[in-house]
Length: 91
Image (tube, rainbow, N blue to C red; front, side, top):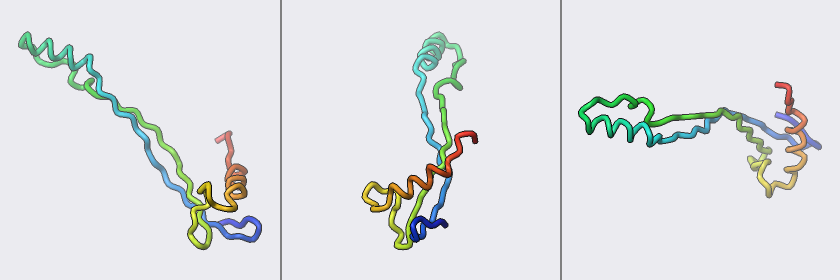
């Protein structure tokens, strides 16, 4: 909870992962050729790859539960300014 110009705000945050999954066609093709020659697949573990990043998402609401980070919120600039002041690039 914090106050800006006498207005009370509530902040919450949570973690979220955004991942990218990729299908690798070359290992599948190589294993297909090997299977046609009656050999077992060698690259089965390489058919897909996954890469992910974690983010911290912040929500801010006022006493009427309005989304204070919405572009339509009247005092959005003050709330964003407050949040920017909290940011420490050294962390």
